[in-house]
Image (cartoon, rainbow, N blue to C red; front, side, top):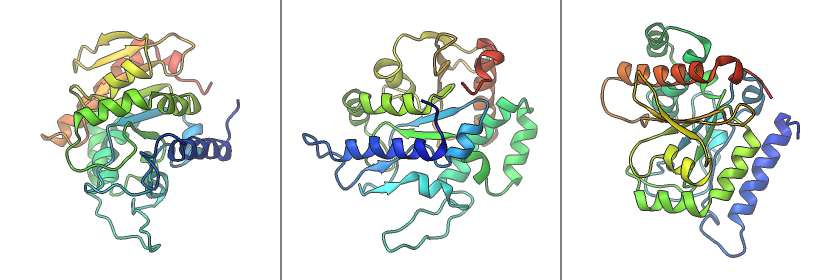
Length: 262
């Protein structure tokens, strides 16, 4: 199926409706976190389509319905409140400063920019709305959690709702899937176990990141385990780590095999 922006969003909504209104499972009823592709026009135009995978959204320990796509499309990443208002956000908010830094580093690696020059632009560039909206974002557990995720819950959702995650993956057809977080509930490892089985596991030379390679005609071509964007430490070191991992993986599998819009 050839996707256009409208069809992509409509297909997403079909997946979410089926998940929320499953006749034998009320887990997501009235509290589903709708993730995916914020700006389909930008995502479909990328030479390398990238999907980020996280454990769960931090919603202050309260589960309520939310559309991430709408939040990320807002120029300052302001979520839409039930009363129709949007509260101001700082440039240090999650989507701009943390997830936004990962998006910026990945874009720099794919474009062949030096990591240090790219990081300098990130630090002084203000809002990173354009680059964040190039990519897709999926949560394994599509119900809001708190500041610290529970590994058992994340692992359970990965196994139980693998079919939904696979439907999203088949819809987006990314070239690269980047799982953010390490440990037992590592999104990348959970995807490798339940969603993207059969990849050839490897380790990057520079960052010692675990990744999985898939056949030339497959989508994705690679699944990569990264640190979580909220990892403590110097932001420059984390930026370089993300940049280096993506740069090495893309050049290992061959840029020509990734740089295609098929």
